[in-house]
Length: 211
Image (cartoon, rainbow, N blue to C red; front, side):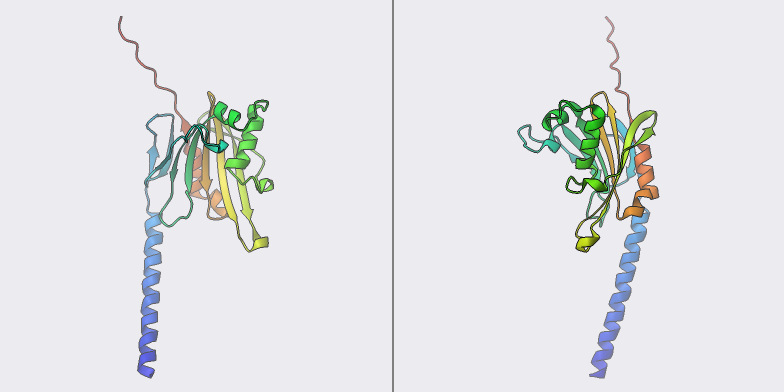
């Protein structure tokens, strides 16, 4: 029996060492991910993101009853091992969103604050969304929101930490959203690099043909 116990203990020790090596290797690999400048096919913006696959969010069926899907195109990146998409960019047709929510009488500022609850936070817990603060990215004014919700009353049943920037340019709303692992992550180097790198690009002029 003692021999069996000793063998089992050694097996556990080996398993623990292997697990530590695997976790450490994964952490180092995650830290070593390179970043790149990304510009979508429509060349509407540029932004820095990790060199990982980008998932497209395509416009929904026009008959969809979900107002948050109206006129929305997006790009998002989920690092290996993450449950959520850490980096997201949404391109929203502003008027389509206004019509979808039946907010024709809202000013642009009021509509952005309303959408911030739906997109940057959780409409069931709007009090955890910060007040919007003015920001500027490459000369374009925008609004930044943070959403920090740690449902400790329900033993952490819901935890959500986001930091988002909203920009409007010629009736197009851009939302740049960083999804953190915890509240402190919203001030991490990754969050700052991602958020401040966003730049709206000027439409390319089509050269005139010689007459």
